[in-house]
Length: 457
Image 1 (spheres, helix red, strand yellow):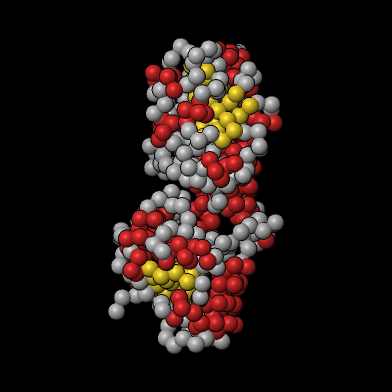
Image 2 (tube, one colour):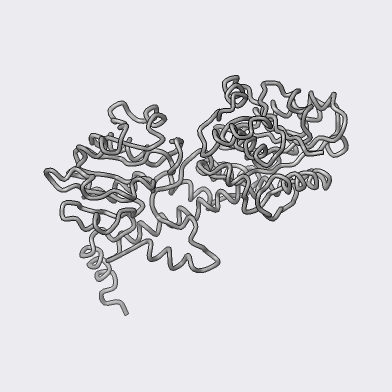
């Protein structure tokens, strides 16, 4: 008999897990407190925007059911994934109120259910949260004992918005924090059924898994920030080129090229808060996560640093076009977006700002000052701009040609944060091309180095 699954929470990850599990041939029930989300799924539609989600839900409609009722979901499944929000509290810790509420509701159903049931906490939490904050709620509501009557694992996913379904079904590895061996065995078996690839499964204690999830994210942000630091240094060198530097050091297998780009800082709903959370748990355990704290500080200061570094090329700007508003391409999410922060800073400096994003225009309007014009097309955004900032590496921006810019009167300054444009655009006589991470003033940079080392022994 094939395993039946349930997923609590129909947000971007939860809904994508429902679609992915169903696409692998399993019956799956999704639960959410929002009727519109439940109705959308039951109607064969995606409750949220995510790549391929609409098509996959529609294609697997006969195996997918959504409900507001925990009882229906838990009684009709053997494994339940809990994918609810764990928002950051004022102190930076991940809050458990939604997770505890979900575990209590699951516990009420387990009280009347016979047979073994596995509950898997998937949302990001800090060490100790599952064992001491969630399992007691499950035991109290069910009147049963974890390990004897049901199993619990902590097993987060490592996904990126815009490719959630693919990432869920094809992970680099599976992280399983197990309450006991039986719980871990059951989850590893479930993953073997669901995943498309043969990803290695790393099993460990719940607390080690909770730390591993946050540690992985904070390590990635440290790597991003390190590359951004190198980009700043390269701008101060004659013929400095961050891509030359990072491509070279990325060949070292101890480092690798992934996330070693040098451009804008990281944003989104996960990365920024994870460094803060790691700092919090370290402090509570009597130590410091100094690297995570420094990474967070540098990342938050980067937009103002970039504006200062571009001061000379921005002084004469009248109308600035910001191309890209989401925190990354292929996403409508603007949470903690550095593009948004740059646009706000430019408004504060008295610039007229126009902006465009293929997906995030509507969500950006709620965050941007009313004076910013959010355009509905790329052509509209570029029509009057004398300065253009390319802030996300969207494929559409990579194809820009010289004739796409407003070259009818004065030259246009193009600041390319991701170094996307081809040489014909970079070298056009009416375009002043500025690449973030490249030496901005070779003569001044060379003079500074000469002065530094003049007379050195």
